[in-house]
Image 1 (cartoon, rainbow, N blue to C red):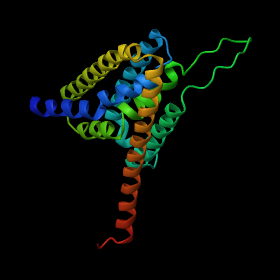
Image 2: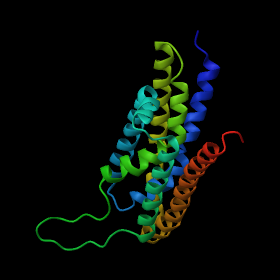
Image 3: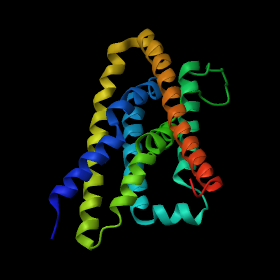
Length: 216
């Protein structure tokens, strides 16, 4: 029998862990110098990648982490470092465009350069969302699995709509406003990355302390 209350709890928890409203400002900063078509493409690729990654984690996430000899804490440290590095990129602003007669230049990154990393991974499909998928994946039955996949697809679609809704903000802010916006949220992104990495370090430290003092 399907437990709708449990699945509703999972849907709310997963959507909260994806934090699309928190990612939207970062999306604006990373795509500020893209044309509209590329911004839409970035949002679409990020949400498709989000769905595929969480679907993969649901089936093989825990086994893959164990097989690779790593842990969720290590993933947190690596993910935090990636987020912080992208924050430094936002703080620095776009690279100057150099004239090159051999090929046309474009200001800012291409959609694939930011859609998968850092937007889909690790900002949307971060350690929290992946852990939630792993825990729910222990349920039995094909119906349970289909419901989880459907909920994940719905959350990815809702995230896509939120990212698209953020696009008009770029036009409202203007060039100067975008520069200020990028630097402010670059700093926020660095802080988020440091926080995630510190959590991973503390987890490793706690495990190391427990190993040194098993009786404690």
